[in-house]
Image (cartoon, rainbow, N blue to C red; front, side, top):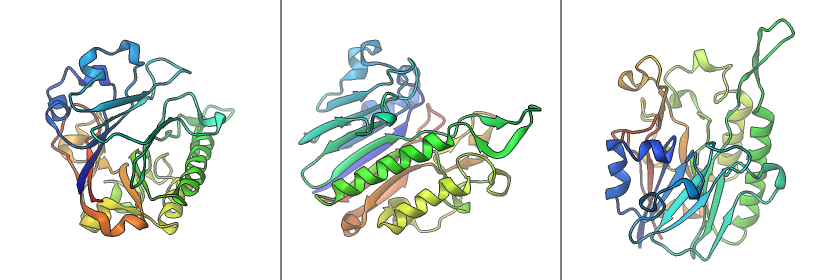
Length: 269
């Protein structure tokens, strides 16, 4: 059975719902759709945003700050179990993870932390390569990885979302000028190396190889999207037990409405 899963950082579900690009969601019949950066609690959403005909919906909203972070999943496939947040309380409260257990695999939809603002020295100068939330970000990644590895002993893992990391030079338009920026720091990229070395497959690269100029996020500044000055920071990773089940993986860069676009995976399970 082929199932289609998609992931989209929508940069505010209430904001994007008023844009033409949100017709992608209204008209799609993909089996599982993960949203990141919903920026809303459930009680702030209209019924048409909370519900989609034929789908069950699950929301994990930030409780530490309103209008911040947040994830959602819409699924035509009924999960065996649903879990919100990671098991470690240190990394709970921002609504960053939804875990659905399906019959054939564990599915994670994640809005992984960014590195935050740059650290300043006593004179107010930026400290090269130092960002306030990078330690939290890396702790979050480690917590997720350990939990995923534990669950993987039972069944394979599929994880999607905004990882806030471009893995290799090919994954952003200007690698040389971003080597000291969060999202492309060596220790951040090393985490994705760790995942790959542990047998997690970057499904887009698996299907498409080292195709260039394929990105999933563009800054709103300086006409970055029309110029395709972007970053590929949205992924579907699958544990290698599912390697032979990967049918297709794509970036839907024609879908507008957010500074990100959807990324999509087809599995034959």
